[in-house]
Image (cartoon, rainbow, N blue to C red; front, top):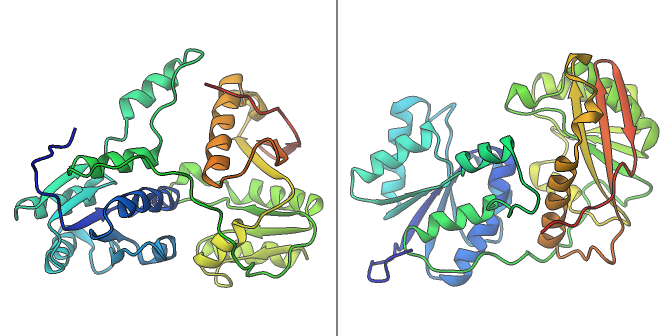
Length: 330
């Protein structure tokens, strides 16, 4: 619990440099903090690419460039000096990786207070081993971000779901069924190989009116452009729509919300990909879907939803529509 007699920070540095999904959840925690402490000055240390996530929050962004200006120990110490020059007096490390550890240690040595995220790794490992029926859900990442701020003395409730934003569609009026495909990741283990990805694009192009490929630059963008040339209803978004535009595209309402679980197996030695969607996995997907709907203030009673599973076994791709029903969990 925070100490009530401790002076609260006036200018908070919040560090979260990657990955995109984790950075995208940070604004929800910042919105709750800002609501409780409107006079608090907040500077977010993250990549320039992620600036659109923080539009309208009333926070500042200090771009962290670990591959350029802030590369290596010397660059990270330079970043710490830049943060001190802004007058920050406390650090909330919402990342807790080697880079953020260097930055926060340098600032702590200059007398700044520091709080660090608890990622709950031990709890998650225990759940992976055995998850008894009715076990309470683990704390969500947004709640863990809020906990970091609370360790610095701030007192505020967990955030309420944000109202859905009405955004213009950057790619025109929606007609028919659209789907987005993001096969790439900063982590090789989360990236689908080009071969299976191409076959999946072919299948999606047959089943949907438009297919949008999200990718980074370089080889990823070249591959996506090749898919666009091969299929008339495929659009490669890299270089055409900025991140803010991609957010606008994803945020569009539809008559039916489809949650798709994709499982990949390079060969049959580990079993069929579809077999990986177990009862426990269905409960987990249902919890994730319910959290998303609550965040968007979407009524599960009044909005049709569907759960699909795509299984990729080597060269074979199977798309099972309406694979399972929503499971209400405690």
